Amino acid sequence: MFEIENPKRVGVGSFFGTFTAHDTTSGQLIRDIKLFEKGGSRWINFPSKEYTNKEGQTKYWELVTYDSLEKIKSVKAEILEAVEKYMESNPRFDSDKPKTRNDVAPF
Image (tube, one colour):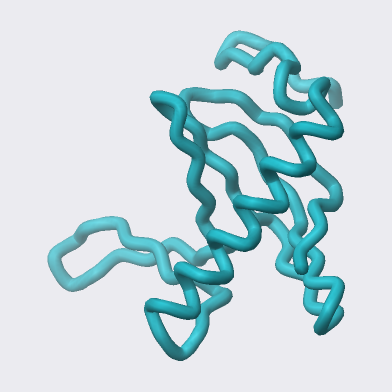
């Protein structure tokens, strides 16, 4: 079972924000998960490292992974379910005005 911690709203394009997923069963924390939203759909990306492949294309290597595609999909689905529950009980996070590229950073 996952709980959402430290949510930060970004709201630039489809990039909704970041958060930590806390697996309350194992104690594992997955920090800096990115949440995206577009056309009524939401998805997440685990923390990743950018690299350039042999063809000169920018790619991303996920720093958190599992030994099967089924397990990755299952964990991501569990985390998305926790995101939905979090947003239901914290509607302000879901409805905060997204930032625009013209907003000034508060620091």
